Image (cartoon, rainbow, N blue to C red; front, side, top):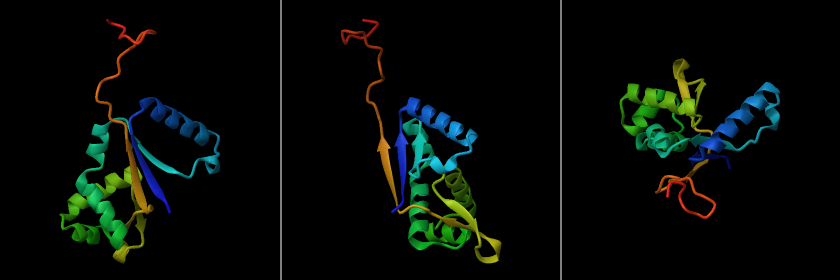
Length: 140
């Protein structure tokens, strides 16, 4: 089973992951990368803007029905083809789907290369505050 892991938060970890990817790429040693696929957003708002309910519905429809084109994908979710095309391009950029050649008449075929999506959201209710050694805020 292949899983897309989506996380939100921990900007330091996001930065470290990006730096590690660059180091791995520079070393041309991509085979040693972890095979687990992670899509990480810096904030909850980034997640909500990128993975809207309509886009998640589109991902599910593609995974369930394996349409052979973008147009067929639009029919599955009863939406305008140009809107679905835009969403598919966004999802491809995020790595949530793949667009492969080989559909009817040379059409791009959307494919979901995952069996499931798991999300972990770090949603602090209070902003982090600088805390002194005794546990009191630094500005107290």
